[in-house]
Image (cartoon, rainbow, N blue to C red):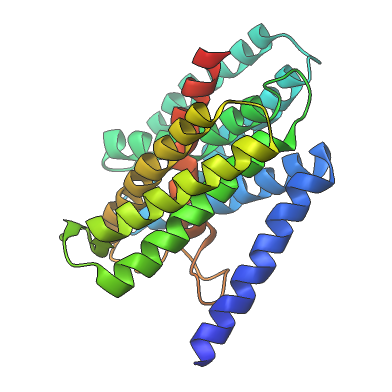
Length: 269
């Protein structure tokens, strides 16, 4: 009972902070997800260290911050897109840094250094692009992705607990079931119909497609993180959120879904 109350209070506070950051102002949105990115990177780094690797944490942080800050400057039309090319040489400086560290498993260390940048920072930059899709900050698309992810996760969990029998990937995540997936999928589609009436950005079909993309990719995002945690022998990516684990635990599906939603939205645009 104590754990349930703790988990509920943490979840409520986390949801409020997320919603306020998105709705209040574009600056609070940018800062909030910048902090989330950094916390996910730190947890990711410690997770990879458990797999006996020695990734370059400083470079992970530097590359991610530069990409995120550069992405914000580009979407706000402060600098041209070509300015991001300045970060390209930095990626190759990582190889030189590793050359002089004299660590074992050089290939593994380099791979682990770049992996969080691709898995965490890149989706966050694409989230900025989605937020400014219309040329100026629009909270609706960002908020819809958040709501779709939360709705899917919540109903997938509830339906899975109640009637889940057929496991999606029993060796990776024994609790995930096809019944839960279908429940979350249908709930997200229902939310898509509601949003289509509230926000006339897209027609109902396109809203449903977005909900489908998020339902499918968020599931794989959670499974991918489960594989990483199993390899590291960890139950949670961190302990910063009482009753919930780490920040990366809460954003694994969200991060994985963003590149797919981004691609779909920009193909439409």
